[in-house]
Length: 266
Image (cartoon, rainbow, N blue to C red):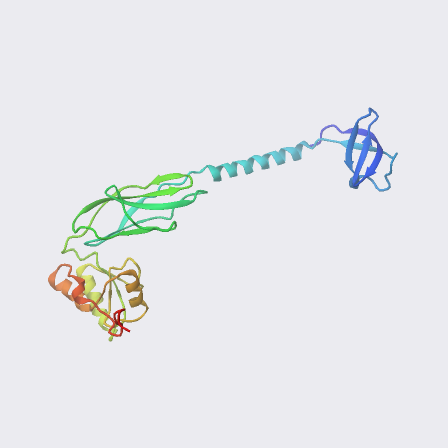
């Protein structure tokens, strides 16, 4: 919709550098872009400039502006959300906690801190971390655990959980990965053993695994176990755990590579 049209007569006073100096009958002077004047305009030419208000376009652009303003407000005014943690796994001496990816909107993570019984732990977590493993814990002991996420928009404290480490006779915390074997068919019997004692296994080695079971001390999984400080044990360790009906010390069943020599030897 267009409002009333106004038309004003001007005399071209000067043309210079793309600008025209226009004089009105009432002796008003305005600068006007000469590029949008009709062709052939020179000093002394008389032009009529018509002005009209486009209300319809004005309303459309105003609505577009307010819509964009609302979108910006929603995007930049949403505060980050505090994480909710859960117990992912437990063993006799460790507890693994996990949480969903952080919802921070426009904020940035500065640090993630893990607390056990109100004491901050010395864990170096990446800003994108979604789990943490607490080690060196007492057997059959309950712990209160939570995390604090420090962001550019403030400090977020997660939910608090109580988690207990396993007793000596609880074998459900065992989570092994199988490495290289002299006879691959031996793994099937060990998988059955794990089912009997309520333990777990995985095809790929991750930091969630408690042990690497193998008979040959080599290969990518073996190398990663050494890097991640995951005990590498023989199948006899699993058999001993089942026979004794309780977790057995791993050091008596360690598998080592005979070709690896102490660092002091040349």
